[in-house]
Structure formats: C-alpha cells, structure tokens
Length: 294
Image (cartoon, helix red, strand yellow):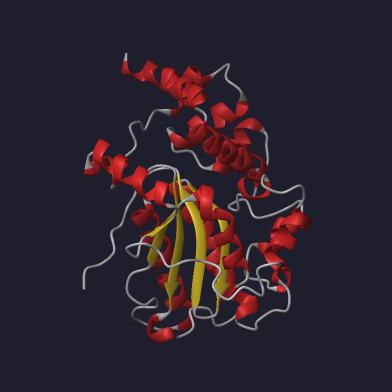
C-alpha cells in the first residue's frame, strides 16, 4: 500500500500524530512529558515551526503546527529522533520508540483549524484521563487560560477568533458530546473544503516539486551586515530577520534587544504569521533582503 504524500510548503498547517511502537507508552512518568516538551521547544525554534496546540497522551501525541518553511519532515525527524535518544538513554532501553512513520494531515485553516484545536484538547476527556480540558497537565489547553505560557506555544492565531480565553474554553467544552468531530481526511492527507482541495491542485501546478518539498533558505547571512541592513526597521521586523536569515536563537536576540525570551518569541511568531497574510509586508521584507543581491 502506497504511503500518503508528504506535502510541504511555506505556511502550511498540519495535524501531526505519532503513536508508540506496539502501542506501548512513550511517556512513562512526568519527567518524560517534560523532556518531550523541552525537545519540542528546541525543535520548533530550530526549524521555525509555530505550535498552535498539543496534547501528549501516554502512548501517542497530537500536534497542531504551522511550518513557516517547507520543512515538516526535518522538524519531525529531529523532534521524534532526539526525544527517542533521550528517552532510551534515560530508561536504559534500545530500539524504536514510535510506530513507523508519523501521520501528517494538511489542514484548511479557514474551515478546520478551530475544530481540530478542539479535537486535540478533548483527547484526555474522551480517554477518561481528565474531567475538564484544562485539568489535563500535558496538553496546551490550560495555557490558553493564563497570561503566561511556554515560549513555543503560539496562542494568538487561535484566540483571535474569540472575545476571551473563557469563550474559547466554552467552545472546547461544547465538543464533548460530539461523536465524530472531524471528517475523514481526503486521500489520507487533506482535511479541508472542496475549494481548498481545488486551490491546492492549482498551487501544485504552479510550483515545481522543489518548491513544495525540501525548501531551503534563500539567505543565511552574516549577522553584522544583516544588523546594518535592517537597522531602522521596527523591532519585530529586525528580530524576525535576525532569527530567520541570520540563524540567531531567540534567547540571543533577547539579549541583543534587552527583551525576555518569551517577548522575542511572541514578536517573531506574530510577525511570521502576519507575513503569510500581508502581501505588502512581504514585499517590504523582500525589498530589504534584496540588498544582499547587489
């Protein structure tokens, strides 16, 4: 049986799932969950991936993510591979931890993003591991109800659809009685409207395979020159360029701008999300970066 396509492009939204080998536990104790979340933080920072929601269950996991570059496979290889090495070393075991390939479904964010966010956060309820979504300690749900949250979790895109975090919680709770909250993915890899599928076919026809898979950075620039080029731009603009094109970590950018890691993360993620939708901003960025071609 043919494997589902790995469709990768900039700005893509995915529902990613991975299950333990032989359905065995991939998290044995609290320290394992924390170890995975630390690996998730490192990997999302390294590959510029936005984490919109997550839920870690004893023998499997769910992620709702957005890739700002065409690098889903690189991100997941690092995330699952590094965690497996750390888990095996910690528990003195050998061999595969996860069952085969992870599953990645391309999401139509306009039609299914919120429903998928609800589905992920309701997993512990459906499994009888918690009474309310925000009671479960190993999902992102509780972070949506507080002002502070992990730097790798990007909440704004979700909460922009609601008047308050409590309204979002109400939306999540309304799904508890639903038996089939999501339709089956089309061809095993698409979850979206008919228009979404048709538009995606057009997208494929306009781009070469290299544009949709194994995307590489156009720039990897010397930081001193990069700082000179973006000087005078708004701080979020500068932070994004130093992170995206200069390869600096968010922590080092924070030290440069005298900001906390969390503040830098929010600025970069918001700028990246805005960049995907705002064509004028994208043109401004391309104009600034074109300086390096001269």
